[in-house]
Structure formats: C-alpha cells, structure tokens
Image (tube, rainbow, N blue to C red; front, side, top):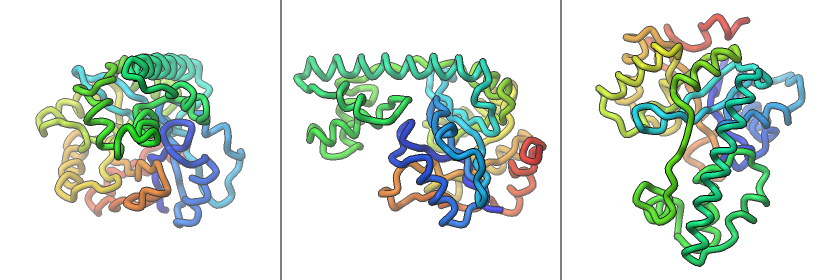
Length: 277
C-alpha cells in the first residue's frame, strides 16, 4: 500500500484537474489518494464513481481559527453530501468570496484592476490568497509569490484582509458528523513553539480530533521525528500526504514525501477502523 492523503485540485488552489491527480497517482504507483480541497468537495463529484487502479478517499481541508491563528484540519473518509458539511462549506466559501472582494476593493484603490474578472475565469470554487498572488505576478505587480505575500497579502501588506473562519471545534465536529477522521494538516508549518504545538494537539484531541500529519513535502527530519513522538504521546494516529498543488512545482509531487518510520507505523492512520469499513 502507498497512500497520499493530502492533495488539491483546481477547485481550490491547485493547478490541475481531479482527473490529473488520479492519473498522476496511478503513474506514481499509489494505491490510495485523498483529494482534500480547501473548503470544497466539488472535485469528488467530478471523478468517475469507480477507479479500478486507485482508491480515491473523499476528503476536505477546512480552514479554522484556533487561539487567534489560522490552522487547517483535513477530513478523511467524509460523506460530502452530509447536511452539516454542506452548510459549513457553503459558509466558508462565502467568507472566501467576501474576503476576495475586499482585497479587490483595496487593489482598485491602488489603481490595480481585473482581480474579479480573473476569479471569474477560473474553475475554482474556493477563492484563496494564492489566486490573488498569481494575479499580482501575472500583472507584473510583483516578481514572484513571495513578494506578493510580503508586500500585499501578509498581515502588513497593502491589501491584507483578516480571515473569518469557523472555530477548531466546529471544523472537527463537522468532519466527525460527516463520518470522517479529523487530521491536523502540516503541523510543523505553523509559527508555533513546541509548547504551543502541544497545546494545539491537546485541544484538537479534546474536540474529537484523531490524527496529525506526521509527514509531508519538504518536512525537516527533526520535525518529522518530533511529530511522531507528539502523536504517540497523545495516542493520535499519524497521517501523511504531499499537499500537492502544482505539477510545475518540481520539489513536490503526488506521493512525494518521506515515509513514516517503523515506530510511526504503529499509529499509522491506515490502522484506523474507518480505513477498513
């Protein structure tokens, strides 16, 4: 078995179609792929019902607030049409549109036009800051994405707009209600001390969360070991995924991330009862 439990299509901030993700997963020898777009599940409906060579796991990645900061919770094995899930994702998508409009308004005050038309040209359902970054690079306002976040999209940027996501508790309860497994996405990428990361893990588990990502693209080996030990100490399952977005980003690919080590395998998410149900 070879699984990638975190990937994105062009329905959120990925660059490729859901069909591309499936085909790339097959080419790379995977047995399981979770498509986990930001606050939407439209990619799942776009795929054929049966995949002969690959198990496609129904997933989502929900942005939420915890202690005044943004964290992402992946839901695996969800029922996309569950009423509570549909309601939450609708609210999240509306918040994304409002945020995008507020950014557009600020850009227009700076004499930069066309963001709304750019969004309308895309297949995405969930608008993200990454789309705005791409627009600014396309318009030659900034040289690259890093510059866009520093000058425009970051907290001190010219068009920064605060997010308004659901709570951590709401994200986890919704995933659980939809029959899924809640997973903390890429824990080492948040600006958190080890003490704060442990607090996040504790709060997450107390809300009904069950797993953390113990491996993902470009993870530092020291961080990977730390996350393994953190999961084991809290009796949390360990998930793993590439967080794939773009085939042109050659530093990542479907299925490209360090494998869970032997000790981590003892709590691997594929040992969860829902994996076999």
